[in-house]
Amino acid sequence: MKSAYFAAFLAATAVPALAEQPVTLNFVAEIGGAAFDCSQSYDHLGATHAQMNVTDFRLFVQDAALIRADGSQQPITLTANDWQHENVTLLDFENGAGHCAGTGNAPMNTVITGEVPEGDYIGVSLTLGVPFALNHIDPTLASAPLNTTGMFWTWQNGFRFLRIDFAPAGGTPMAHEGHGGHSDHGNASGWYLHLGSTQCAAASQTEAPSACVFPNRTTASFTSFDPATQVIVVDPAPVLRDADVTVNAPDTSPGCMSFPGDADCDSVIPKLGLAYGDHPAEAQQLFSIR
Image 1 (tube, rainbow, N blue to C red):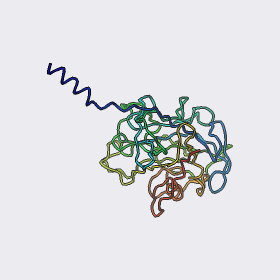
Image 2: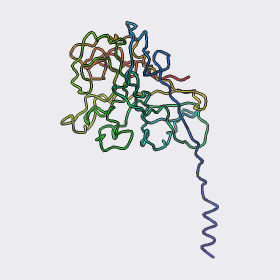
Image 3: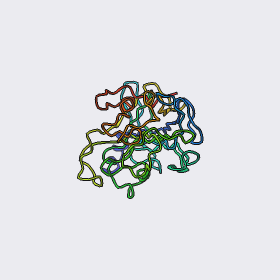
Image 4: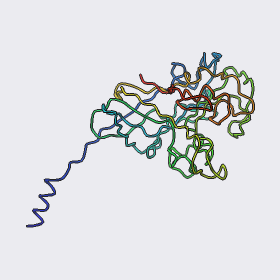
């Protein structure tokens, strides 16, 4: 009899589980407001209005969340798949064809999928980056998408959070080639926008660091966003508005790769929402909504 009373007590006092609602965040890649396509060239890029091809366009996003009316955030529990692991998603807009044939591959991903507790949400927040605990691992042993070696620098610096590679249209050579020492950049025939953590304290490039002076993760928040009807646009053109993408500063990595002391980054990193040298952070201009 006691067990029956106890069971009835538990049934009466049990808190019902909150229902979950699915969430899909849709992204589109653009170059200067035009849809990104590996086969296309794009005009009016940078301070000199250069015509450029885009040979790679990928980025990691962490900590995607929906925003309630009171400003609080509800993290999205991501659906585990080949593009998502724990709280990280790889967005891949290149298809390995056309100008992207040299660096990319066919699979693409333009969405973040997951679920949140049922509720009313008015906005969205996300961070360009990979969490420190996942950033400095062996990509050859990691779960997808953190096994994407094309997005990896070294154990010391971790992943490229953002990789958008440009090359002059028509085969026009760069005015000056850098000396970044990165083997996958070959002769540095292009201008590369790479964001990642820098000045990470480690005994060598093949060891994980204890911390990084410049984590270089940047957050974008939009307080009016409906995932059912709107998209998140990723467009590097506003970020490059004041940079000359046809010239590389001598003795630096090709383009802007986040490392300190590169004049090519002076006007670029601040527009990603991060301070760079003596240049204060500006409002981030990589993400927008439509």
